Image (cartoon, rainbow, N blue to C red; front, side, top):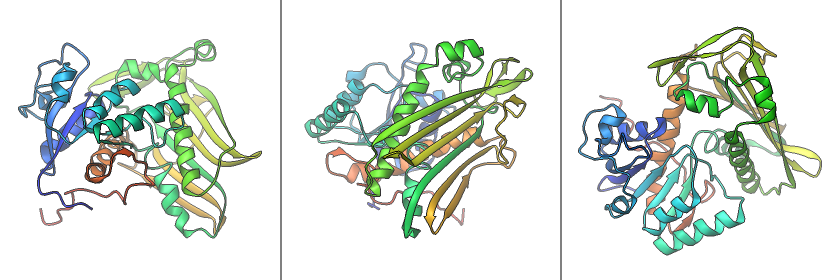
Length: 360
């Protein structure tokens, strides 16, 4: 790993759940220095970024002034809005700032977006990387690492299992993800965010295929939902608020994303999100938050990755922390990289930065 003689200067772009965790980590880890913060809302404009993140004043005022922010001496932007804007990303890169983002882009399948981002990197002398937890780690990096043990691979399946009744997000985002819709609404008008998810998961499948020398011929996605048998109380915003999924409304979602070689399903992502366990139909699982990597072949391989308490009460919050840390821990390699779009196939092994302190 590149040895930093001074902190990496970070601008945090957006202060949702992941953004707040990035700010908090910059405040506690001397390898990173927060030097700027972009916010969307007028209510946050001018406030101290540390206070927005709940860690006390850091002397960095959040701003909506993009020109002023991009003139700030900095190394890298952690770009973490709810929905990515390619034009905005290009503007940051053209200003000479590296960008790491948990909004997808593990590889870029859209030729127009790929060309625009690559051109912006060249113009600004900057590098760009898509990170996160899934995509960004569990569905792409872990299968690629595990594949080193394989003599033959027939199929890869990645299972994402999440009890979302302890979520870190706002009621608005929960709704945007399709929860608490009536079944009629869910069938008639699936949330736009689900379409975005299809794009980013197909990118992740494409990255695994590229890493293993495979070409995907076509992609398919399937979406099913389950209904709450009764009113389900859920936690929102780190437990600061409560919410309710109403009986008879969407409380569980199943997503399957598949990459085919010919007519054979070669790489599959199977996601199951549930608000509790009292659903119809139910998709039973024995852990409230887990990723399971399955490689069918010779030898058959299985790997399970979990995070947090056994009951899952803190898993949503810690899953977001994992997302933030994968972005931050990528920064030393991204800052040291040559200009251009960098996937996980281009960067060295990502590992923790200034995190291991056994004697403290």
